[in-house]
Amino acid sequence: MKSISWKALLPLIVFGGLVAIFAIGLTLKPHDLPSQFIDKPLPAFELESVYEDQPPLRSEELKGEITLLNVFGSWCVACLVEHPFLMELKATEDIHIVGLDWRDTREDALQWLDRHGNPYDQIGFDAYSEVAIDLGVTGAPETYLIDPNGQIRYKYVGPITEDVWMDTFLPIIRKVEAEG
Image (cartoon, rainbow, N blue to C red):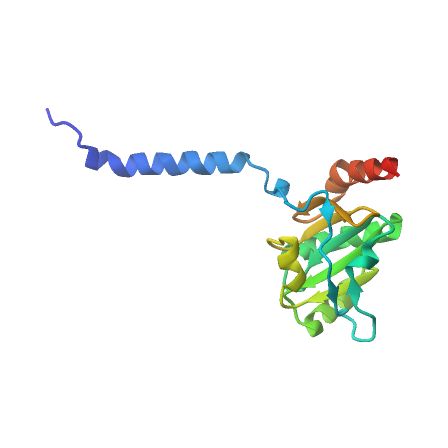
């Protein structure tokens, strides 16, 4: 009787290991990426507006009220998925929404906003990731919840949907409001 050699079983062992790694990976929540900036001040910045006739966006202007800082780009497919909800949010909620147009061209961004609508009160133009690097942006869309003191209270990776808004953002907003 012939015995099975380890060399013959090696591909099966490697395959089994990869399956185990991927199975564990599927149980993780990619939207819950930790951020070193939670409960820290928003990094100071000044960016040109995506609209050339508007003043620059300054981090200081994100103080005084609860603000969503939404990282997007005209090239971002997931941003297009999120965009209708941001438009609805702007129409139905009293929330300050600021856009950070990331790794884009001004022309593409303006065409995209013209085509899909503009839910933002202001939009900073971050073509070279000047602010995105300071925020630890890993991709788009990402949304930061900024409290009235300019502290980052939450970072969400991925498109905001109604469920995400109701289950994640609103409880944090209510907590921030209660802290007054």
